[in-house]
Image (cartoon, rainbow, N blue to C red; front, side, top):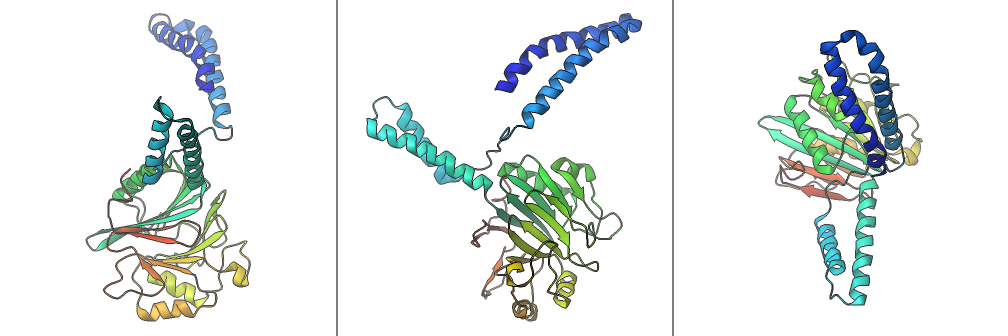
Length: 331
């Protein structure tokens, strides 16, 4: 609102000035060099004013998708404050509930989260991993086709993410529509000739979020979300490559138990032998995910997305499983 109040006086002269310049350009083009500088100066002032307000702390907050219970509590609190005949104690309780709703929702927005969304289309699967840290968000995708980009856009809209800090596309194929991905993130890294988008020693990072490759011969990736570190193994080649040297850690990670992976994600359904090999690794990850259905028998310690569903880690090593294909996507 303060930004609008300061920008409003500039809009009328800018609009009239632009209309006058359009007329002069048709009638008397030679006069344009004399008339353009004042309009250009007003335009520069408006741009600088906008950038200054946008750079202020908390200049913008994405509301995201509130929890249903919070919405109900917010509605009850609003009724308690709006109805004139509500007793004083109940009105005070409604005010407290309103403050609690805002505080809880802001805390949820700023929490560390890793969301895996798996979508099965015939024989092809598509995985989107969305990492959030204190309101910021980054994206890892195993496919680069237009459908995956549109699903990532719907996911961002549904979660209230205006723009990803960065997007890492692990598909060996180049994106079908690079412009679509560029609209979603400030930085997009993808394969152009089949080579990995990142090489060992390189790192894609923003405050609290980073991704880096663990080997040149595979697409095994280390993902950092706040203080937690996840191991991403999109295919079997990545798994075998990492098992050859399970001591690999992202740069800056401490060695030993303090540098253990908090979670591992496999982009395929692992065999019993592969699960045993992962379990035999020292300091094996405590959270174990894979994309696809687990079958009739459940696997101890492993979480599966199902044929089409999602998994959510909320920073406290807890997990939720959703089998609804459209649930996590629709805004």
